[in-house]
Image (tube, rainbow over all chains, first blue to last red):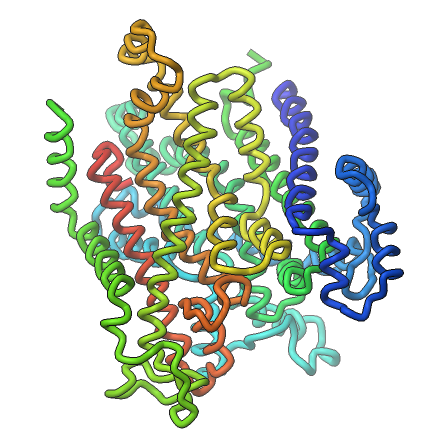
Length: 326
Length: 284
């Protein structure tokens, strides 16, 4: 286990390096230099301003020097400042990150809580009505354009029924509310975004859970458990479930980039001031320092998520856990 | 499995028996027809502006109503089918080529090369895909051509892993050793002997990939970062229609339905292909 942990931690560093290289390459795909693009947006920028920009971002130096320069600043968490308002990129991301992480964590939690039982029940009652209904739901989940789902929900719950607020994080009059009222207000605002952000994941994870469970149920040790007369519930929930859960833990890790990437879509539509919306705004404005910063941080979050998933996997899988005891 | 032809026949028979797969095929075939014969099927010119006919609800003349410039939504939807077909095939074509290239090299040569390529795949997988796509679009101009390339270049990792896994198990088999004993070159072994045997999972994943590419394109176009108006794509019809959602819901409903049904069609087709090509995986 210790060996596994050390190996896993050491692997993070080359990955980080790779992430920075790819981010750097992406930004330098631009025809011309980033300075051209900024001044293009603002034709009044003088030759002097261009020169200044070039100097600040080191754009007059060769590419590898620029890269090393950028990585060194990255190492001390200096992501530069935004082209649009001159504020520090790190500050901008820091104030937007908590809400994005909150929504993604809640979505992930919701996905596991709801999809795991759905998958298990569909697998243990394969071809039942329940299984068929969830299969239809799964197909819809995979094919649903989430931004459209968000629009439909806004029409239904916001515009037609007036049940739920459709934009922002809190109501206009939120200032004077007590703690619980504010909590309720916030929760109401989060229902639709969280539902939209977990929709595809729900479909995917319940499907994985189902197939993983179906595979486990066919194994010999399950037949053995049944043969020795264990009650069916014990066979399913003790012997089968643990094994089925294991392979799906890594799937959760793999789902994280999808979730984070998706936050751009629902944050924009529900006007939530999170990292996704910041990224989309930066894309429109061609605000390269912000784009680069979020790309690196988004990839870093995924790396952390995968790391946690791997550790969790090692903890549940006795083949890795007990390795260096035996 | 006596010969190639009888295998193909078996697959076809399995596929035809699968009702959902047939439904998917019918959806996709109808889309092909719409895209190919757009000028003959649509009743109006999709870019004809008619200021006297702005935001008219669906009626006998305009089955899907008109948009904010008085253009016929149905005609625009029919032309939009061309975009979604094009995006699906070109993007997934790029994905598949890159994926096969890296997967084949990694799986066939193994060792250092394999380790390097797979770490590269791991690193690529760290990026939230939609963020990576947005970043490239921020750098390049948003256009149909660029988003097809971007989607293709950012989503090949799954294919590479699939091909590598297939190659790892295939290359140990006798027919590969036989080919090598006959003096076949690496190139010949990879493309004539290994790849054809690894194509089934690639084909299946490509079919699902088309659905994914179409969904991504529509989201990008919806945010104005994909296909640029006046070229009609389902995503950008939705994008302009969204502003009138309070009173002109048809502008938001129909394009979304089209995207959903198309993606559903490809997914059903993919599922059917998987059941037909590899019955072991049935129902999983």
